[in-house]
Length: 289
Image: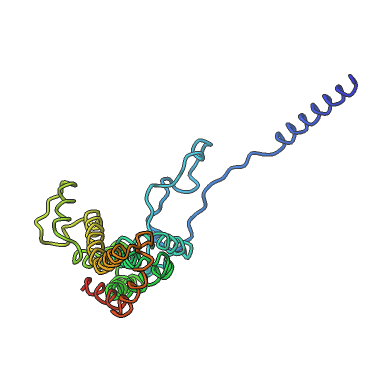
């Protein structure tokens, strides 16, 4: 046993010596930054490095990050376009933010809530299913927002692709049609309330004086208010049917029979005879004009 342990120990020492010897044989390598190519996209007059490439003299100089805190991207200004990878990154970012923008900055919220109230008033549980209601709400949202989306494309996207405006101007022009839409659907009292909370002065007139952080929550509160008012109006005729059916059953002594079992066919019959879906959707869309 002692010979075995001695042999293992000698083997470990030999492996350690060989490793140290290999590390001593490998020469030290130095790395320096290369010169910038003149054909790259972007301005070559403004560099993003603090010191000139290749000016490091010691190992401490190489250890320091030789990049400034600013960067310049030139888009279609006679010096190329945005890199394909950067375009993909921007596109994926917009796709990730699209659901939030769809819910908060368009008519989607009011439409979906009203459709849900309609189904609940009919007491049909899952008919129509959620997928149908969401799909219908999406297409109705595209119908309502089509003029604003066309304006965004013509006034912001097309000039950006043509290189007429920069990214900052693109965002200003792109958000302006949405601001106009939200301002039409927002009550002044809601805007004043958020202005007071944020301690911001507003004379109650100019749309440009309302920050986006105030306009969006004011718009959302107004959308929820309008949706619940419309939902209450939709509920009224169906509540009358429930009351009539419940009184009739009680007068007949059929108190053990649930009134909803009898009233639901009458609700569906009334809804079909009145062409309920067309009546609700048409009047709902008119609230945005």
